[in-house]
Amino acid sequence: MNSPNNSIRFPLPSEVETVAGAEDADSMYPTFRRVVPEDDKRFWFYDAMHYPEVIPPFDCIVSHGVFSALSAFANRVFVFPNMKGLDVRIINGRVYLSAVMIDDPKEIEERLAIFQTRAQFYYENWDDLYEKWKSKMTALIHEIDELPIPDLPEVEDESVVLTGKGISQSLLLNQTFNQSVDKFTQMWHYHMEMILLGYGAYLTFFQFCRQAFPEISDQTIASMTRGVDALIFKPDLELRKLAKLSVELGLADVFLQEAAPEVVMQRLHDAGEPGKKWIAAMDAVREPWFHLNTGEGTYHHHRSWNEDLSVPFSGMANYIKQLQAGESIDRNIDEIHAERATIINEHRELLPTDDDKAAYDQLVALVHRVFPFVEDHKFYCEHWLTSRFFGKVRRFGDILTRFGIIKESEDIFMLNHFEVAEALSDVSAAWPTGLPPIGCAHWQSIVQKRKAMFEKLKGWSAPPALGSVPENIEDPLLLMLYGITPESLQVWGMPDEQSDTVLRGFAASAGLVEGIARVITDANDIGQVRDGEVLVCPVTSPSWASVFGKLKAAVTDIGGTMSHAAIVAREFSLPSVVGTGYATTKIKTGQRIRVDGHNGVVTILEEA
Image (cartoon, rainbow, N blue to C red):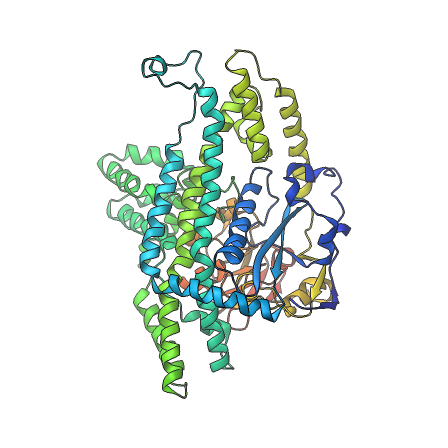
């Protein structure tokens, strides 16, 4: 990023006022995530893509793990030429990021030499390294699962004596919690090991295409990667199979009658042998494919399908309706691949020399090799492991509740992980003596105050950016993933000067449709979407794929052409515009809107 752009003015971090009733919000988060005076000299943007809600104190462990690992791999491991990473601040409960860029040409040149050698090794050995990565990730997930949660009995089991174990459960309590945290943090390092290079390969291909084909759209370039065989779509595929099975077994009505999951399961049990057969089929795929949460894997309350069957059951009901209407619910992957090949070949023919064509072929092959990981990692990391980790944390919440530190298990998420370690130390100090923990009143008071502050913070309208805007946005990652460009910042910085009926963003997925808007700002409310509506949300999640069949289109506040929202929309041929900035605030549920996925324009046609 270069010199400031003085035509756009966002508040400085120091100018952001505290929220009435939540003046002490900073105390919820670690000191190293709080604003310091030097932050006024930098440009920050709100990461509404991954953190669209107020972040609970414990959940800030996610942002810490993500961006510490990202910066370590960008700056210390692979040594990216012009970027050292992303710095993080939590302001009024929202996550803000600032790119740490390098402007010195000499330093960039020196770093480039290191980067090329290291990146080339990964690209040349990608398949082997990816197989090794999957083994590491699967092992780490099982390690977290197998960590024992002490039950702190009245008297230790006799085996402690008879086997000469030599330790009591008071030691294991903090040890197991710390190991859980360490393994969760380790996962984010695995996450960043290959993802940055995946984006780097696409970026090189993107830049080649923009130079070789000056009039090509970002959407056309992105369409050359459609049809990826990514694990993140596997849960939805299994759901479609279960929908077909329910129809074959004559169980369709069980799912079409809206009811709570426990009622549906009882009806299946009452259905005799067909019901038992269907339940067995579901149980066979729940591990691991139902470890898919409703969000981006950044909040503890975005529960997985295994924890809340209402989301997959709702999606399956939609598939059943399509089957009963004689429609196919299979993704036409052959057609997608054929369209992709046509676009690739047509552009190849436009290249003037054999050398250009050879370079193009090499880049296309590289992108297709590495691109599945760009989505695959989400299932392993943000969904499977993260769901298991938060489930483990709830077990520690049970212990703190049992000993009176907090009133209910979910209260553990009102403490950050450093405080949880301290509270568990209180329990491990008290349990050996049989005396009550000292800090019960202390922690309960903190939780009560934070719950009140948390509700106040929900009403705060977070500025999309803070600080002086650079003249040029030179980081391609900010463009492709977050949709941050000089043009989008102009819109964000002067919302009052924008049209009340027309919003502009990135053309993520082609198509022109009209429909009734359904505004969803909480991932857990995705079940409210009705057939034929246009989803308007801060950002979509791959785990919503099962409801995409209901939609006419999708519109998001945040994201660029290579955001997960854009990728998923293209894979499901769903017209989409991303990165509009203010769609969820300007559009109301019930309004009729037009979505132009070709040109990145959303128009409000009628009031609700």
